[in-house]
Image: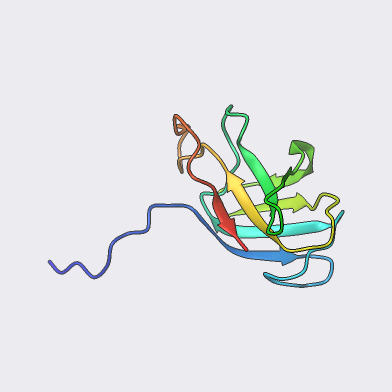
Length: 116
């Protein structure tokens, strides 16, 4: 048997699309919907750090997306409403205890999956 490559087991964000202006991995519109595509993104768990965050590249401040603004919460994608943010560059982070299929959760949140 030949092993061609190792399986990817972690979670990641591959694309962030602003549904208002059609921008992909670039500009986002506060107060509008954004689709986040990736793997193992579902926000689950009772740890208070679980959620979707916008992290300022300028000062590291974090803005957590209100749970009511997570419109779709699935393994392969999230649909969120972008919170009111000051102009600037942000990194998007998703923190979750979701382990993949089934009902098992990680004991502690996985390191955040992020994209610039």
